[in-house]
Length: 373
Image (cartoon, rainbow, N blue to C red; front, side, top):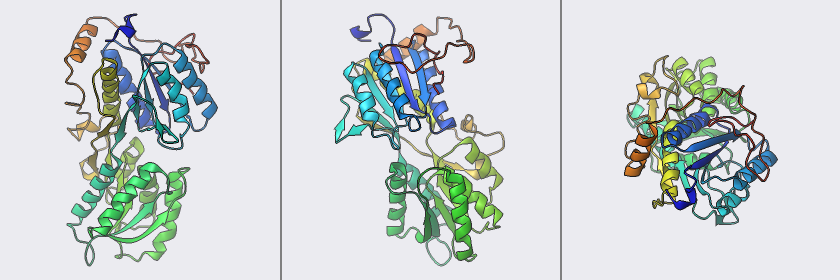
């Protein structure tokens, strides 16, 4: 590793906008484990940055003033235009940055040297729509499958990208749009989808629509419940996104909710840490990387499956072979680290609380993976 780490310790800060529940924590845990496996010191900080912008800025300022060699920033794509202001001082202090599901930009300016990794939102939507077309054999009632869709509010990046793919499928005649409802914002998504679909169903005669396409699993949970309680199993649900709750509802309504697509956040955490390690070692990487989406069919699930063990059903889930693991020095770091006995950190209730740092390193760092609320 570079001479800048002459103290013999590679110090990583992981700063996460905690907005996606289980997905965020799977990412954090995998990234921390991957960093530790290479002998790095990893401090993880998580908070709801959109609910406490001032606290997020103070936390980022503390990281900028601390002696971190690299930073991973997670979940800044929605409503976080100020992320540039928070991360630029960290980059100016000499830390390398890898962002996941975030591209901090201010007035067309980007952070020098930042590498961004993303879910492939276009690919997620495309795979979901391909599964829909395949389910109906390319034909619905009287032609291409007739699809009613839930549309998100314009300007929310991942929903816009999903809906662009829907428009392309409709333009190419692979599906026929039979109507839509548009949901505003992202607050209370399940209840909003339930109410919107319940209100629309009286105007959708049985047999007139083949499927409901939903661009986010949180919307899909409410939509599937609405269809079930209305007795409308004639309409099948296809969606994007996976969580523990969506896996449970998919199985509860397996005759309605047919499939969803997702990226593996646990794999993303491990690979993003590898990307940051490669940057610190002077390897040359592309400026952007996209994770391959995967299809989850309800018919393949059972009650023992959750977001943590989905690889039981999908052999390619959590398969990081070939994803920034070809650097021989990474294998040497892991082999060297495996010779040491690591003592587990104190549980959060016993660890010293981590206050949002000001302009200096925190006096007592929470062990890797600790939470900042």
